[in-house]
Image (cartoon, rainbow, N blue to C red; front, side, top):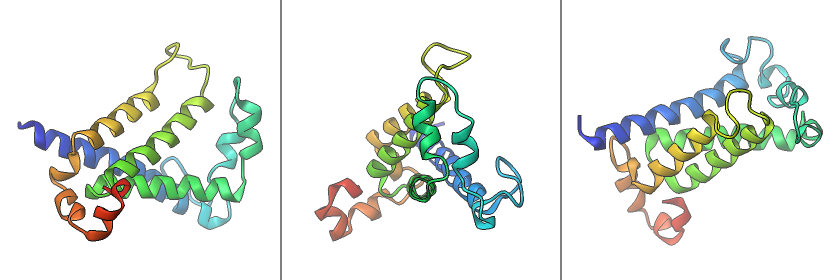
Length: 159
């Protein structure tokens, strides 16, 4: 299989992971978020998790739990990065947004129980940044079309 297709498939897969996480938190689709426990039901998408965090940064994360601004930033970040990777558009910004989310989640799980430093969140960061840097949006995606828009040309962060 050509590497271009692998980059394209990996981009779509990680985009789906991020986008699905956002949808599940909003609508309680019965996977990570049970029906009746979703944002649409009035339940904060961050409160349950952030209140249960232990470790060196617990007090910081506890103070953010259930904050409406944090809820909005979390959900919008998941959806924005997920859509960018699914479509192959705004890959740079999607990679940065997704990486910040993954880094914050990584901080929240410190200390890691299975490895002193690296868990799947660090791997996600590396994958997101790698896919953006190799132009994976052009493989099975809309990157070439996206980059031809004048607005995107004027604002390179949207590439």
